[in-house]
Image (tube, rainbow, N blue to C red):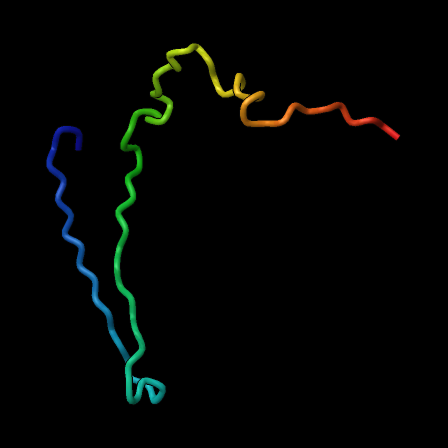
Length: 75
């Protein structure tokens, strides 16, 4: 399918069998579908992130965002 136009004709229907509980008002029935791509990318696109211009990574932020870890004394 590479380089081809993809067309999907999706048909769905809903059959309702009336019940005594439906009177005087019918409850809501839902119908739908979801398109979920699979194999769309050759690799994970979130890994294509430019480097930090300051040359730092998240491990350099421990002083800014997280408290320094003190050693725990053993009893």
